[in-house]
Image 1 (cartoon, helix red, strand yellow):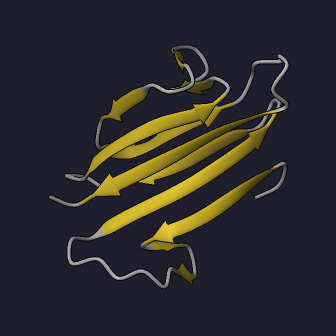
Image 2 (cartoon, one colour):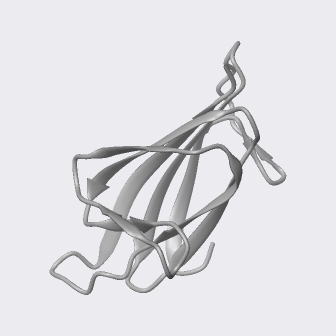
Length: 105
């Protein structure tokens, strides 16, 4: 990931497998995005997904219909193809920090 940092706490992302084993299929990602950076994440059909913003504001959804999630708030995401996440706030925080959790019921 350019212009940000991705940490994999559980599950498998691309060709990387975490060292944490979970009985329930889980993907737990920790992101820091620099200003103006977008990330698109696939959400498997039928999985539960939510995001918790630790610092800054993250914008969720397509460019023409985004919703802001402020620091210390949780947003539940719909399952399906993918979700777009963006740090477009040019404020005192140089990056937005959030965790994204996906679970298969």
